[in-house]
Length: 145
Image (cartoon, one colour):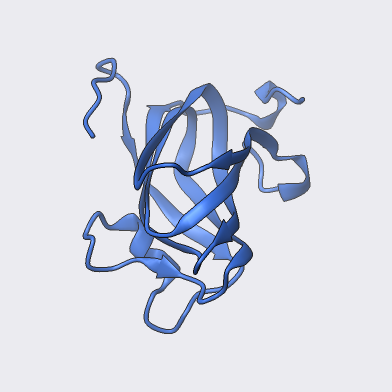
């Protein structure tokens, strides 16, 4: 699935900061790679999560998730590493297709938490974060709900 973005909107670099669990051969770091021969899996079927950290703050335009077997998830973001203050940008949404692109409306963030609520097992091929890097974006600019 290809969609066109504004010229300044581009895929953003990130790393996996933390995860609730991973299986020995399907590590969380596999979500960084678009190779469909590898994936992240928890070997469980409910309530697992992965936390991604962007290399720099951004205005998040879209999240693309190439899903292996998650049925429902929730997406939260934050500018500061304070998970209790993260804003839910996609509360409890289903994953009807393997390749999903969720609009994020240029939400300021540095961290993205994807909470996998149901799946058999919880497994994701790769995640792409798309937006505009903004040097100097500070947490006080983050909106709260």
